[in-house]
Amino acid sequence: MSATERPSDKFGGALAGVTIIDLTRVLAGPFCTMLLADMGARVIKVEPPGRGDDARHIGPFVGAANGSTKSAYFMPLNRGKESIALDLKDDPDKRIFEALLAGADVLVENYRPGVMEKLGYGWETLRRQHPRLIYAATSGFGHTGPLKNRAAYDMVVQAMGGIMSVTGHAGAPPTRVGSSIGDITAGLFTATGINAALFEREKTGRGQKIDVAMLDCQVAILENAIARYFASGVSPGPLGARHPSITPFAAFRAKDGYLVIAAGNDTLFAGLCQTLGLDHAAKDPRFLTNADRTDNSQALASLIEEALARRTLAEWLDLLDAAGIPAGPINNIEAVVKHPQIAARNMIVTSHDPEAGTVKMAGNPIKMSAHADPETRAPAPDLDADREKILRELGLK
Figure 1 (cartoon, rainbow, N blue to C red):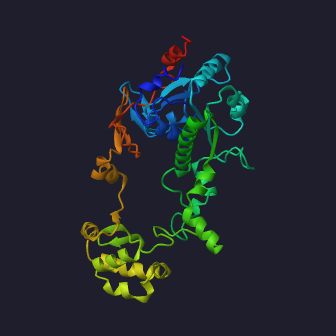
Figure 2: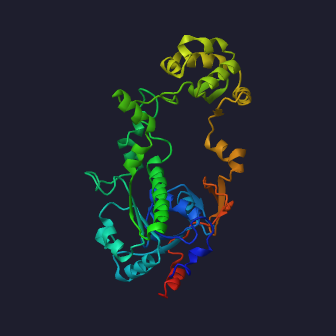
Figure 3: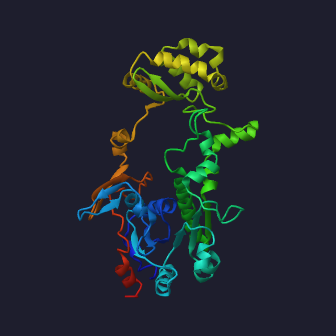
């Protein structure tokens, strides 16, 4: 397929005209390619015959009209993609895969290092055959270093990357972050790298390899914890909802539940004290500066909660908002997906699956003025659903 003939041209978005061959499965890689598909790229998902992506078999499941079930986990991550099932150890399927590569801009994979080389599609081979190809690899520990061949899942890199050591409450058992940020951050960083490589290719005409490790991504997001360690020589521990170096910046109990307050500077703290009727606290030597407040955070929290106990969450949130103090309720997921701000930002979108019906899912937070942000998205493909169409496009049918 030539650049002017590729079917990706019919897709809208900033990445229209970009074709991505997606060898990824489960979460990190599919999250990356989902973002790229949302931005207009054509994503052709290459899956193992028979079973497909393991995520197809991870719940929760929703009922289909024919009595079968489909994964509500798989469908949002793979919306708008196409599927072809290929066995990359089988010669006829390898020929199809090589034809796909000839028309591709990007190859994304999340195998362990060395797997693509064993299949005959390592970076050194592909760069000679396809010098404009961008090769993006997401793995647990990257393609270099002593742990490069070790297997990893989200939980493993959350533990090894340090984020679990600063999550939860002091003295409590180790706590996993509630979202799979080991996978998701890797997907985000891989998508960022791909977009940068596409931009550079416009200037140089050359592709390149992108090597993203899930463990590296966990280190990259430990901004405050790493800074505190190098400043003090002491490993930070968990602080519950409290920020380690900004105070008051935590969850507090009101009359009927918890809210968060983030008074991140002296002006906001003065406004908070006035709103809560704590004018004396604003002049207290223990709380004059942010450093003072952080050193005396427990004493300040007691004063704040004593004041908050006089009113309900709703009352305080209205008062704090009127005073310009950053604050908010601690929403459960139902409250999040039903919130008018989430609706206004089109952050819950729908996809109509021919069997499962209408499926609701998280939208794309990247809003671009030059491109629409549709309320509906193309559904995730059934396994091998696009085989005939793809083969015809490749001239193999």
